[in-house]
Structures are given as structure tokens and as C-alpha cells.
Image (tube, rainbow, N blue to C red; front, top):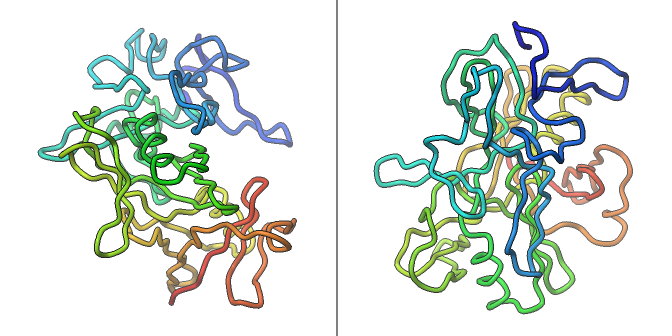
Length: 293
């Protein structure tokens, strides 16, 4: 928490029982265009929607940082994606909600077990999800291949693609081509069956199978199995995660096609299906996870 108490531009976050969870940046309603408020995504085609409330504005003065602006010095695309260049690679990032305060954490950049990139500066904690730099280009590439497709960018960088009566869950890899290159964005599949987005001769960005919400799944598992931990395997081609309990590990592989029919109407936090698949209730959707080993 903050060693200076609650400062201007900060708000308290409480859980359903009224217990203080954290201090976060942003206005009370999250719509005043302050640092930490919901991001605005503009100029997107009708075939793609974005849960803007899942992502946080970086621009603006932060009282706790003596008025410094978190966005200053960062390369940002027109759609709000932050680009971080590391040698020949370009990390493509979206800041996720909430931006919190924790004066106990040292400054620096680290990956979290649940697949986010965490940046701490002066007690201000920003977490990033991997992102596609050109969301409009992604939507156009998908509809060129699948005219009926609808795409939704939800929390934690997760994409849902609805086509042919089925919903597919994908998450972009951390690196891509950066700012939109010259050429037409296209969806392709490599010899290993991995899906990628590429514009012109730019770098490919993989779109990998993913869980709808590793954060929610971790909460479900740790509640059901005290002492268990869940960790996302970065850039795993099958979106796999590692479940650890009492020194034993299992590899969990998300089913990238969401179930339809009876399985989709599950109300319990988790169930083990007759097919040996573990089904999680994540928000108002259900997704299966295969226990690989």
C-alpha cells in the first residue's frame, strides 16, 4: 500500500465484504480521463470490439511521482499500444486495470506468474498484457479470411474470435512488428500449425491458444486447492500453464474452442468432465483445460 496515505488522483478499492484490497490510480467512476481511468479505443471497424474498461490510461500527472507522467518517453501507437524495443525485438503492450500503489515493491520490470509484465516506479505498479499493435489491421485481416468473424479484445490481452458458430480464444505473443508496417495485414499459419499476424514484410506476431483469464483460474484453483500455484508458461505454443501443489507439477493446456451446449451452462467454479477435461467458469463463460501430464 502507499506509505503516504491516499493522494490526489487515487482511490480505494474494496472487495464485496468491504475489505480494502488496494489503492489505485483513477477517478471514482473511471471516466474522467485521468491516469488509471479506462482507455478509449477509437477508429476500429465494426468487426472488433474492445473491453476498454479492462485497460488503463497512462497519460497524465501522477501526484505520488511529483507530477511525473508515466507515458512520457514511451513509444505509443495510435491505438494506445506501448512499444518497447529490445534489440531486434519489439514488445507490444497494453496497460491493464488497475494501476495500483504498493510502496513495498522495488522499482523495476518483471514478469508475473500469471503472464503479465509488471513495471514498478516509485510505488506505482503498472501491469501490461501482450497486445497487437494494429487492432484495426487485425480485424481486417481476420474478416478477409473469415467474413462472418467477430473479434473481441477482453481482459489480460485475450482475444475471442467468433466464427462459424464457435468461439476461439487466443492471446498475442509479446513481440511483433511494432508500429504498422507498409502492406496489408494478413493472417497465416506456419508449418507447426501456429497462427500469426503479419503486415507486409514485417515481423510475425503469433496468436496463441489461451485461457480466458489466468487470474480468475488461479483464484478458483487456489480456493479449491489451498497451497496450489498456477503459472503461465511464457510464449508456449499451446498456451500451457503449470499447476504446482505439494511439490508436484501438472501441465494444463487450455482448449482454445469454447464449449457449446450443456457444458457452456456450467454454474460451479470448476467441474471435471467425463472426458477428463477440467472446466472453469470464467466470468459468464466456460472453458476447458486438459491435464497433459
